[in-house]
Image (cartoon, rainbow, N blue to C red):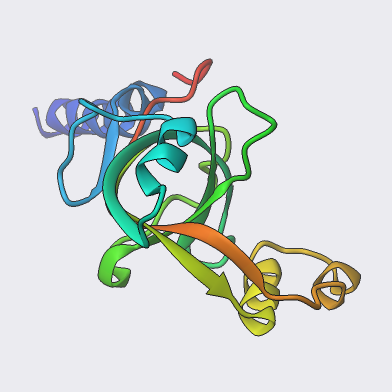
Length: 161
């Protein structure tokens, strides 16, 4: 009887950690819903004349910090024209999976205008695994819109079980 319970428990653990468990939407940080998420194009309109705005965006993870998952670049879905948005996480309170590139996400939080220093840009390039030459080629600060996420929903990847 004990071996039957052990086999059942083993099957249950195997099922829970298999690809079937990856079909669900994953939530990070504060609980959020997908309702009301807008595109990057609409973000530009919302930001017009403002330094920051509370918003919920939809996008695709283009890259993620390979050391901890403490930041990600989120691109507008299906758009090669829009610059990816640099996303960090409120109070350093949660991280993203290191292998989440290509995943669709909904991010909720604050979009804000910022200047990123050369040192910060080089640090982020190093975190992303860029070559020494690519890192040394960074010589100018970058004026950009960034995002401080309080919550993230990550949709299951297509083709994954």
